[in-house]
Length: 176
Image 1 (cartoon, rainbow, N blue to C red):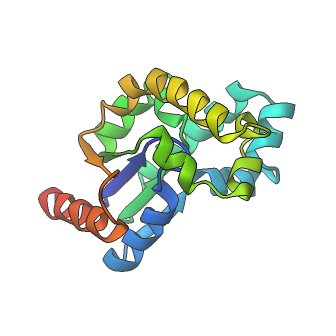
Image 2 (tube, rainbow, N blue to C red):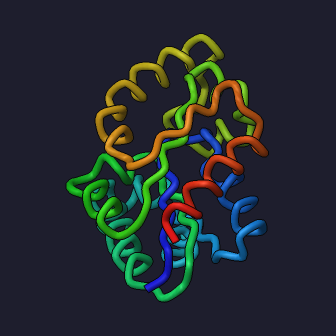
């Protein structure tokens, strides 16, 4: 069975962008779970939530986690921000591979989000900067107990993408 690196953290923390960069450096397959689910469902995450409900989406997410966990490929997996908070997903991902929590502050994530990034996330639409940071701070605090179950935590706030990648590469060497 291949090596599995599950990147976890709040929306906009860099799971997808760092995952893609890591895949290029390592030659591992990269999977963005939200993109795979959108492709398979033929709908955006927002539309899935609106028309099928969160429970449906979370079940699809879990099925994909289980599918990826059994793959023979070495894989870097960008999870959705809420995936670790549903049922026993964090415990399952920890048992299936290495979970790496990309921790950033609400202020840093807010500054990283483009206008498009805000628009595609239903809970962030229409919020000004102050409201956005307040919403994210509260939501991140609720999710912290789940995220912090990750086997590895990378404090991203004062680090460049290159430094973060170097840290994660050292984890891969430990894992092999």
